[in-house]
Length: 479
Ligand SMILES: *Cc1c(COP(=O)(O)O)cnc(C)c1O
Ligand SMILES: [Zn+2]
Image (cartoon, rainbow, N blue to C red):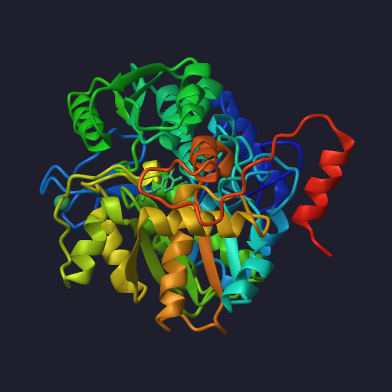
């Protein structure tokens, strides 16, 4: 849907403007609000293919027949009314524009994301359109000059979670406006989902509850929902323990579930793959490497590529690498053993705290993504992730521990010759490094547990003495 600049009036290519304006006024008069008469639609279906479909505004998180995951199913036939070239043109026209809501990289692709949500219910903070960083110096050091990092952490709350949360919270706002009763929107979180839900919920005026594993998230992440006025419940367990409780709360109907088990999130997150291709002028990279915890994001990435392929925007898939921390690697274990079902493990502590997950809810979705994208699962130890973060930072990045897991996996695959130095590789950076100050400080002060800080760069403290400052500079940069 295109809209007249500065208004919420859609512009149809095929319809005479007068007829359209008439119907717009009629609708507004009848409903007191505006719903775009969109030709596209999406609905909930069972991920495993059982019968039945539900409106996206319906609070349903599991298939009533098989108890499995749900998915959002788009009317792809309807979307074929535009050619691949026409979609590209439309998305390019909107990108970086000022017309609401297209300042958001997610809503700039609204027909592919969540077509039925009218402008007035969209809760957006300009998510997406994040920098695709050419890691030129770091890549050359590694012998991989075509290395890129998609900086999804350059976002309102500092992580990619905003991409999905704008969609989920907008749908909830739309559903509530149409009569759905919601006491609170809630999530279990390793820190970034809660920060994002808290911000978007606060902007929409929706009550928010977050369940956090106490002592297992960064201070910055803990403070975000506190600042946004959420009910913050720090539970004496890990993420998997919080997830079990939140699922029960949702099943009993006490809260609306905002975890990525709810596929509405994945619809927004899938724009990462589309944006990467758009930022390469619609060329497909050879590899995309993404850190995985609950494994929703890896499957969302696939959904974006699938949609581009189905609608004639791309003609091949990149290969997928899901990168896990060795301390929390259930997908790595399963995939390396040739299994397509993932056994839960007890997640051990890792600096990559947002992926310290032993029982990934979206495992079946991620397995499908790996199968469809000729995928690989790789893992990284604490030592590997800590060192690569420091190496990358020293070339100008500011790497969160999860992004470091992806970079470490990439290095290993390059060393083994699985990735060739001539290929184009994109690592997905999932959060901003500034959220993980404790990790950086501990590394450079040489006190990360079980890690030797090979690249520590601690500050030198000196008296305010000119001669000593000169000596320090001369010693550090000898002629
Ligand atoms: C949520 C999160 C992940 C993992 O995403 P999943 O969809 O749970 O696999 C990775 N990195 C960061 C920073 C996150 O916040
Ligand atoms: Zn089912």
